[in-house]
Amino acid sequence: MALRGVMRGTLNRVPVLASRGMTSAASDEVLFEVKNRVGIITMNRPKQLNALNLNMIRQIHPKLKEWESQLDVVMIRGAGGKAFCAGGDVVSITKAGRAGDPLAGDFFRAEYRLNRLTGELAIPYVALQHGITMGGGCGMSVHGKYRVCTEKTLFAMPETAIGFLPDVGGSHFLPRLQGRLGLFLALSGYRLKGRDNLHAGISTHACDSTSLDDLVAEVAEGGVSRLQAILDSYTQKAEFDKGKPFSLEPHMETINRCFASDSVPEILSALEKDGSEFASKIHATLLKMSPTAMVITAEQLRRGASLSLADCLRMEVRLSDRFLEDHDFYEGVRAVLVDKDQSPVWKPATVAQVPADIVDRYFAPLPADRELQF
Image 1 (cartoon, rainbow, N blue to C red):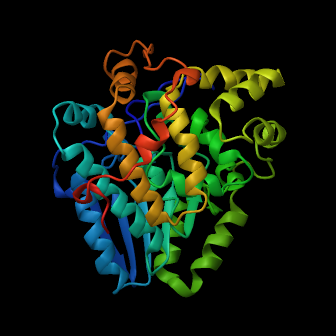
Image 2 (tube, rainbow, N blue to C red; image 1 turned 30 degrees about the vertical axis):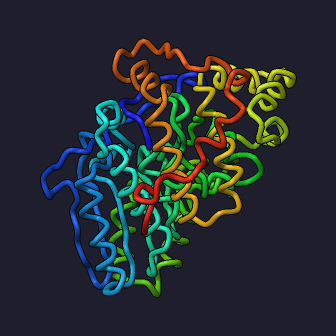
């Protein structure tokens, strides 16, 4: 999931992003084009930062299945230049959840099935991660074989700020990043910009934004046989942040040490003891997040490190259903997106107060008709 509206700020102000609404919309919310056995998908809701809704998912999923057996390559991009895909309308989801409307859970199931398909597609899937790429946008890109960042790429998984989990397969891709980077990103909502996404492994290639149309045209002309060479060529030619090291490299030792444990209390203690400016900022950030969400997220990534993408998504459906049953998700959305007082009252209020049995409850199987089926 991702969030609605973009908040300005630094480490202690987690960005919150736009609409993953569940209402139907016009068919032009997604555009499909085929050129020389290359399929091009354009998520076409630029005013909503190309946020996924159920209508879009229901168009993209069958088209990918159709193209999988007919074409050689699929490329996906976002319209408007500001975002690849910026996440979800959690206000609508929580409204449905409060009303007992199964549509909230049904949305997650449809989205997660699409996430799995992008990761297991039989033909190369190329995501152009230009602009904001958060939550649902991560799910639509990171599982594919090729992910292309630009100088405008802005990645984050900021869900713990609203009492939720880094879903859309976050339990699969985040623990597979270098060292303990994935857990750090998942708990803190830290943002990666530009070429940092290539350094971190969120992206596989880079391209100057002014050259994206040329890249798409070359892939359409060259087809699958030249795909790797074309992507490599644009990465080599990309001028943005050229030669710039990973901005988190000076802090990776601190991240790996302080986030070495899967215990959130131990992580908080390690950050506090470290005493560096970086560790202190991250410590302050984590203290603002939902304690329950952080505990579940840490366990989610621990388990996900040894699971397939499909099994991670099955696990995440169980977790998303449990978050829809509890307090913090609704309170986080209220505080950040509805009343916008930025003062959520978490229950429980601290990590130390999170019940010992909460992991067993959140990760327990659902009734058979609610488990994720592919």
